[in-house]
Image (cartoon, rainbow, N blue to C red; front, side):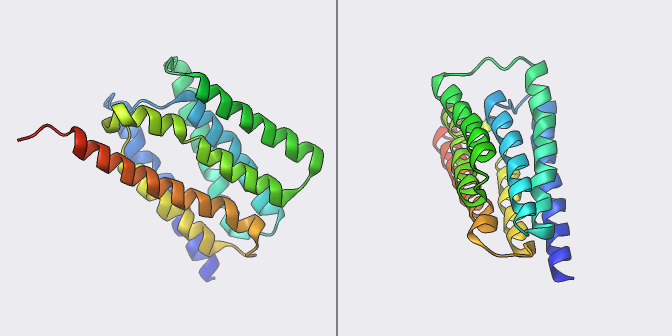
Length: 193
């Protein structure tokens, strides 16, 4: 029963993290990066499949929810014709495709989960890059809620193994790193009073 409660909290937080992001989009303060969100859409979908098929149970559902919500952001970014794409963004996206190919041919869930977690983490690079110059275009609350959602997802796992733990654990750390980065950059760029 406790696992279901943790999964429900993770799902609520996973949904809630998109609220400040969508508000920022609505106010034209937040500008999603197309390849970052496409990376997250694909990899969280893979994360759901790998966690679920490895016995993750209810702890796998936050991957499914976030994959669907990331797809919504991808569609928005496509409609708005995201143009701020540089070579490193394409390189990272190529790695996403390689993870898919790797899993299809090897069916190695552990290595696929490790690669998916690493590449998902690399998928944050375009957002870090963009946020260095424009830290106010990303809401720290979104990534704080994401960190909390992944923590509860870990608590909700039915089966603790490296395969089920590696990816959400990486997401906890990368989201925490992005929150700290955004707050530090905002403080550094805040006009002196």
